[in-house]
Image (tube, rainbow, N blue to C red; front, side, top):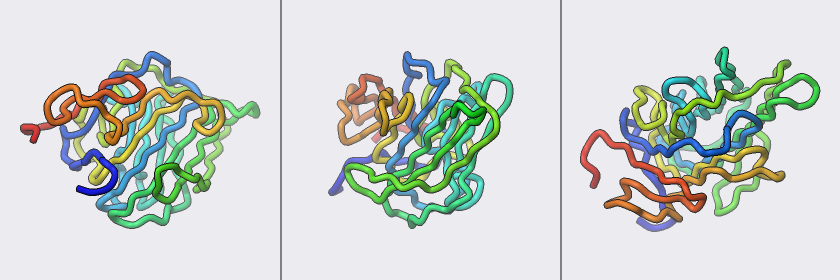
Length: 219
């Protein structure tokens, strides 16, 4: 192909990408960024990136309604959800950036989830899509689960929510990516160093090893 390298999300259960959770606990403010081109942007509950298997630590998805992104997380006692009420404007097959940032405690007794989008390009230029403020402070459970990209459940074992389309990049930041945050995980096929045949495993620029989980033989 020509253009930027990407990973293909087949939308099939058991086919996705995963890496071990980072050493830094993902319990506080969190920033999740993806650069994608979805085959069907109206498909609901398709996973972009998350940390979910035995427990729902967190998940950033296409949402329960068309073009309305959603973030949900487990706080150790119950499942919390924040969903955009504003649709993004992108079309099938068109690359674009999407971002979710959660402030678990805004200092006024709230948690605040912000959704952003950006037109495609090497560097995103963020525009706020929606802000969801809820009147409680929170935290994110620090389970032992892997981090998964394009998978309903980390490790590629999900059933109905696997992403279908191109995945150019997926990042996990501790804090705020635009204001002093720390990039912990960087799923970026264009910068991967393959460590096994045909990309079954690859090392990211941030040091973690990503694994291609597949129900069939790798090409």
